[in-house]
Amino acid sequence: MQALRNLLLKTADDALILGHRNSEWTGLGPILEEDIAFSSMAQDKIGHALALYTILHDQLGEPEPDHLAFRRPEKEFYCCHMVELPIGEYDFTTIRHFLFDHAELLRYDLFSNSAYGPLSALARKIKGELKYHVLHADSWVMRLSRGTDESYNRLQSALNNTYSLALGMFEIPDNEQELINDKIFSGENKLKSLWEEKVGDLAKKAGLEIPVVENKMAGFGGRKGHHTEFLHGILEEMTQVFKLEEKVEW
Image (cartoon, rainbow, N blue to C red; front, side, top):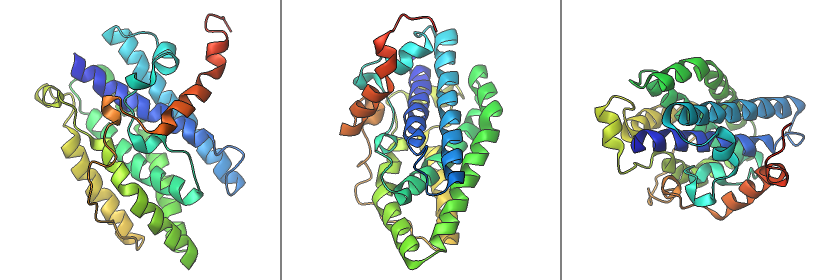
């Protein structure tokens, strides 16, 4: 089913690209603990991507996971724009982490009730890891928002600049109704509603204001293969070693 294929691919691609972005903090974190935390979460996300690519290969006849991760052209990736951006300063990384990981945990909550067995089984398996990611994001949002005037202002500014991009996570595909009818996934609007309530409540506790978004489609396009200028660079970097000796046996 094409709709199921697209759902698995976009979820995997988000995790793969953000996992690689998070790995860029290794050795650069503000404190040693953050080097370890972001490296660990990066491994988790790339592992989640591998698990989804494996379902695509084993159950739906798609190419092997290495092919899906390293050989597809840019236009065949379906990640959202927000995960493609470079890590920037720690305020942006923290807000992206907060916005993305809450959406990801809620997405897997919905997946855990999916009528598609391989997806519901995977969701139940990895939700524990995602809960840790969310706890980590929340702790830093609270810590920085209650720190100094500078840390609060930088966090609010990052939220203002990133929130519209985050809405691209919920871009609705043309064939989504098939997934809803077959009880495979409750749909992006349902997920977005849950996410807005969750991050809105937490932002309020942190004293942050959710910005008013004028262009709600600013972050759209990734789900249809239209990407930012940054995806090409990270794909080139990710696939460097693989392309040197694609047929080598390690």
